[in-house]
Amino acid sequence: MSQTVYKVIDGKVLELDLPSPKRTVASGILWGRCDELFTPAFWASQVWFKADLDQKGYRLGSTFKEEVAACLLGGHGIPAEVGIAAFSRLKRTGLLNADVFSKEEIYGVLSSPLPINGKKVRYRFARQKAEYLYDALTKLSQEESPQESPAKLRSWLLGVRGVGLKTASWIVRNWLGSDAVAILDIHIHRAGILAGFFSSAHQIPKHYLEMECLFINFAKAINVKPSLLDAIIWENMKRLNTKAISRLQPLTVVTQ
Image 1 (cartoon, rainbow, N blue to C red):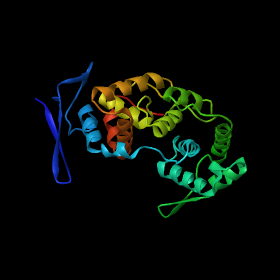
Image 2 (spheres, one colour):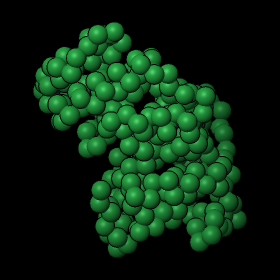
Image 3 (cartoon, rainbow, N blue to C red):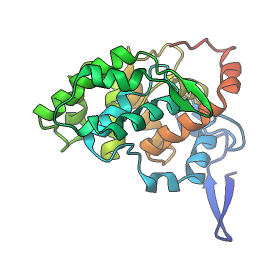
Image 4 (tube, helix red, strand yellow):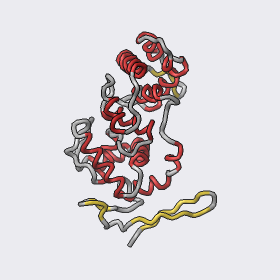
């Protein structure tokens, strides 16, 4: 028996029919109940509920330089709101699109406390990120980035100091709206183990490309866009982090 999910938009009731919880998505992976956290059916319904997010796009910057900067300033244990605040401040200075700039100017902006939710917060790794940003902006000023394909652009971005597969994939997903890459972090890792498309043996970044392939195939199997699934899982797993960890404990302890 199938299961049905409902939502109301502008007074109109819409329905999404999903396979029976006991049907398989892929080898060894059951759809599960749509009202049970972390199942494939749960993620398929969550993506359906927020399909409008895909229409808004994912870009954080108005230029490619700005996009690279925004993604470089995030991740690696830096809370999203702190990374965005640092990017917004740096953007206001005009340094991101300036012809002449220095590491010290960038560091000066990043090292000043950021006002976030009524508190002053210091940006971590300000010196290191200033150096990475300087190198990235210099490269972008001197070279033409190959934006004709996600694979070529990601490969090119990996030549930027401080940019690994996750950050490069993040930039590519945001700027090109690509479904050919996945932004894999601890949240996606945990969700993948709970849903069944990752195993506890998978590690980021060691198995990044293999895991990316598994993630994209899973998204296709539940008939959703990988880029949107990535965003929805990340958003939900941040909020449900404690529940996810408690579910994982009998299986494994995922650290990163």
